[in-house]
Amino acid sequence: MMLWVTLLLNSLWAAIPAVGFGMIFNVPRSALPLCAVGGAFTYGFREVLMYNHLSIELSTFIAATAIGIIGVFWSRRYAMPRPVYTVPSIIPIIPGTYAYEMMISLVSMNSDGVTDALLSSFIQNGLHAVSILFAIAFGLVLPSMYYTKRQKPII
Amino acid sequence: MLKGFPTISKEEQTRITTVVVRVAAMLLEYGAESRLIEQLSSRLGVALGCTSIEISLIPSAIVLTTLIGDSSVTTTRRAHEQPINMSIVHQIVTICIAAEQNPRDIMMVETKLANIHSNPYPAWVIIPMIGLSCAAFSHLQGADWAGVCITFLAASVGMIVRRELSSRNYSLLIVFAFTAFVCTMVASLSFYHGFSSTGSIVLSSSVLLLVPGFPYINSMLDAFKGYISMGWGRWTQATLLTLMSSLGIMLAMGLLDIKGW
Image (cartoon, rainbow over the protein chains, first blue to last red):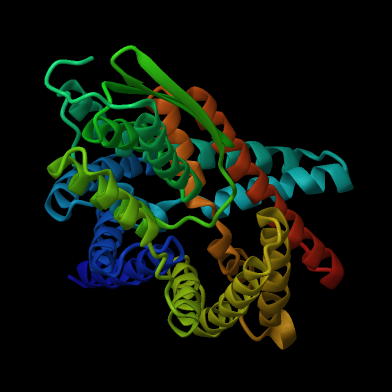
């Protein structure tokens, strides 16, 4: 029971960055609530999957596919291109920290010399960042790959 | 000439071409993905009376040809770097749908294009909101409450710096590096007298407002949908932005002699 409350609270926290980054990307005002819902849903869904012992990449992929499919319905209904909803919604699961840590170990390898710790931090963080990013992008692309079979565009 | 269509003179075709390439260039500048650019411009062109539109995209320019019967007009436009603006992309989609409902009404499209407004969010909304976003990130990664407050402060100051520099038309790379520098400087307050016990989380999450999410996602989407060169261009741009932010962080950490995250 306690676990579900924590999960719900964390999802609410994840809705804030979705709205904030939606504002940086200047999404239309009417789309902001949907961004919040999408962000909370994506983060919460990924947490649930990870709690059930799926790897972070696989959970990210499934969560991104889910928001991609939801985005198709929203974009039909409100006549907006899908990135308006999907990109702010996946912001809470973007591997930003991994990417920065990879770059920082790269720069410090240059200044302090190559050590085993720096090299392994570079490779590990880089692989994490790239594979999570791949999972997100492939999940977002899957629905539109289905829809390109039918020639009519989504909106 | 094509059956069912009244003749379109060369001047009129040039006018249509100008409108369509303007739409395509705006979409490219404000951060739409390549598939959307190609689809929207060809839909708009067909709605305005063209037989078909051929378009070739590279990250900094657009080459576009309108075909009407057997006469063709080709033009090139350079795309200038602009901050991402989904509101403008949405307005262009609306214009395109309206043009499909009233075919061959180029006057309507031109007036609507001239009236596109970027309606940005006011500073007093966006600055605390970005501060809150980064604070939420640091809370999700397990920072204590003092750390969350410092992240809020650092990200808000960073957003102010980013807005000020962007409005002075500095290159995006410079803006990112300097903003990351300021964010890290403010975030290092958490090490002052051990104010927060989770200083490294504060440092890493206060720069998350600089994550180039849109370029990364757009580059992957482009590459997956068959626009390989656009994908590479946007990927390079996003990587450069990340590298410049890391340089800003490194500079601040070197000045303050902070070791590690």
